[in-house]
Length: 131
Image 1 (cartoon, rainbow, N blue to C red):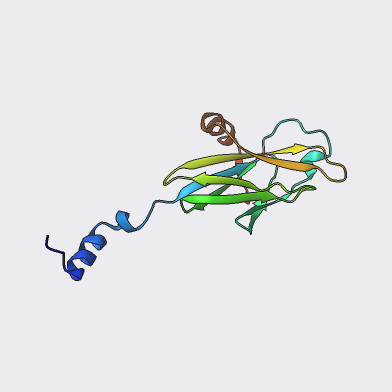
Image 2: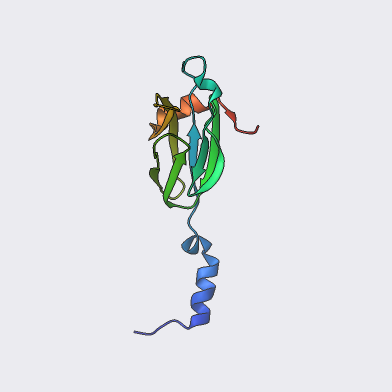
């Protein structure tokens, strides 16, 4: 069996960049507009992706994050730890919903993966955070 020269291999790889680079995916983090009492809409916990602050879980707003395929950890500031791991495939969009629950001192926020069809109908009416 004959081996390809290194320069030819490099040329072939450069001609097909998709071999080297995976297509990014998306995480859409949102908090619904449902009833949460009078005080709870004013509470806006910070949202973190892989240890980096990305915004706040604000009622009626969405945060769209472009991510490399693989495992990522979302979390919000809360009374108890609430890290939420999510795996995003190449070109995949994953919806994560932020919901509020009662806490002893401050509210707890729960992150959960949402059904893509339900997410699509909910987020189309939301405004992008900061927009």
